[in-house]
Amino acid sequence: MAEITTPPQAKRAYQRFPLARRIEHVIMLLSFTTLGMTGLVQKFAFSPISQFLVGLLGGIENVRAVHHVAAILLMFGVMYHIILLGYNLYVLRMRMTMLPILQDAKDALQALMYNIGLAKSRPQMGRFTFEEKAEYWAFVWGTIVMGLTGFLMWNPIPAAKFLPGEFIPAAKAAHGGEAVLAVLAIIL
Image (cartoon, rainbow, N blue to C red; front, side):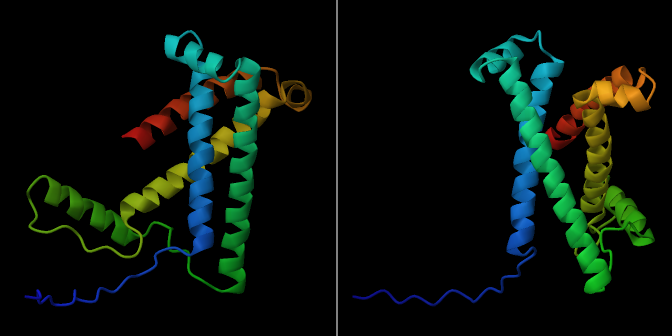
């Protein structure tokens, strides 16, 4: 006897990001991960795990080369993002939907109230939630800090011709601190 089955209900699928944006996200994810791994093994060079990874990658010079290539890839991704943003804003006249607005603060408060049991429902948010906007702007800030400090450390002699010499160790401290903060934020 044949089994009678009813066809599954048709579900509507919505594409959140076009292919180019998904590729951009993957490139940023891979370059960030590579930068985090190769940077932390340099920051914590005396750790046994760091020494093992440096040996696995063929030495500190290879680690630095990989770190630099990943940094260049990240900067190309940033430039692509800025060009695309400019095109969307000035040619297509799209709105800047990642800018925080007052509703985001209200949504954050509503989410907090829900999470501690003082509200019955989570906030209904738009295309981008307040968490996503905060993560985006943290990435923007982190990329600016890491890009500038990384450039100073990569080019200390030319940088010292234009800036006081104290900027180089300050850049190293800021770069390392921001790196640990960024990696921990992603892990959490």
